[in-house]
Image 1 (cartoon, rainbow, N blue to C red):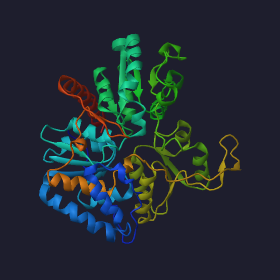
Image 2: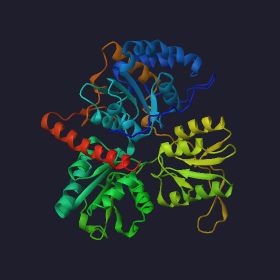
Image 3: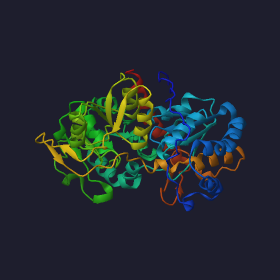
Image 4: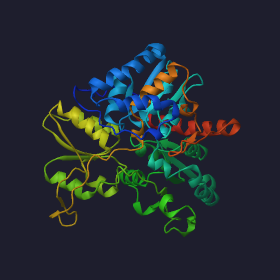
Length: 451
């Protein structure tokens, strides 16, 4: 696999006297092995770099010396600002889900990979890793609310109905925000994985296969992708959300199911569905440019000036000329980091939901009074990876005492509340890894053949 650009540093740095803003987890949410590190962290007098960094250095620098070039630290853009800053400070990489997925396969010399993000990302990295590479997650409870809406046991009854109805004429496109077991379903049906950066490429490829497409799990990314490709949205049918409407329903009872070209699983991201057309217009009427993540609702995306993945949003702002004013609709930690970095270049950044007491009606274009929106909504589950988890993970690895629960293998599922893990073994795991890897490699081929 060749062609992907190396991950460039974000440029985010820890400034003196800037507090580490991430909220502390309750002590009983830490694994027993991590509690001593959490207790020390909580006991620090404050969260400024002057106090936090010497404490972290005492654990992380010995681990860096111990592992040398064989260690790779990774974090997603959505991580709390301090983790993004800390991972880069200690030589790690920060990126979107597509770039993170490739890191093991693109860096074969890295034998110990430590990821501060959500479990499905670590599992994806592990799926593409070599047998001599280990992938560890700093907190196995770090899940994804969207992925929780498409557990394999939820999808299976609907999958059975689709396969009974269409057989080989069904193709599954699995968003990166899914478990390996769902990615394997894409592989088994001749489909592919996608990310927000390449969904339009993958769905365009899928349409050319002349099959019915199931897009899982994000209804909004699926609909935005269909609109971007000029598909007839009357032929895009959304399934019920399994958390709120259950999975005990019949496919043939849905209106338009026979005429549909693409089915959308009823999942969504709570961080991105807060954005509204009214918020977009509020900023545009003030002369600001608006860019937004495509996990947001179609009505908001269509009114925005641009939409795309986290990498797109970051680069779009940082490559803008000085004096630009840009409202960004995505996860709050990301926007706070982006706002800080853009200010150094004379660019103003605001969170899209950070409006005051009036918005513009989409229907009438009139300004009306509304309650203030709460800006800066962050991915709470991803933020379960905090400084004590990072310090503890590296120290325990150095001492050879890392908990097996933090070791991520393809096919693992972890309960986000209890941390109970279910691990596939034997032929079941072999088959799942093969199918999921096929879907991931197909995504890479589709993406890089167009670059």
